[in-house]
Length: 214
Image (cartoon, rainbow, N blue to C red):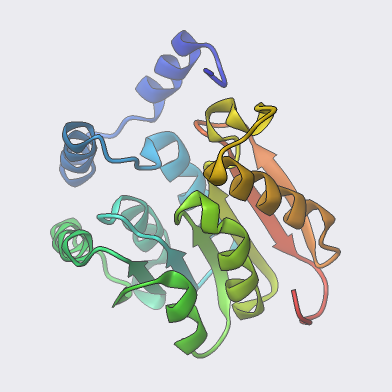
């Protein structure tokens, strides 16, 4: 299902497209591999959320080969810290290379493995957490990561409209994960959540309540 009219989507892609050589190369790589990335429309949202919130410490749960990380890193600047997590060692190596080419100045930390296990080992609170892991794992990953988000922080998640499959009467495992996660963030009194119907849907959840088990 097209979430917005294809011509409108192309129009927005044209407006948000960048002449940045690193991002352009990554977009071509994603197209060649059939690898899902957030794209420039969502990338701009991530950049803006970082700047508007004043985030200085960001955690990515599922970094792929680093496309979203470049948007975050450029918004953070030299005073910030970005932690990437990725199950694939090859993707993480490629992400490191792209970030180096992009010349970002924030502190970078790379962790290979399951994001749910990695977040348990990380110390301190985060200002913004971005989730883009396997969709079936959205609820469990949210529960593991939620305690690491500070009050007033943002929990941002990609693919929450899942190409319209969230409306399927008999959803598959991935779709059930997305639907359950979305219900969780809207019902959780610790968060005030909104879904932006851009690209494949992006949820933005503001932590408004004092820290307690999620």
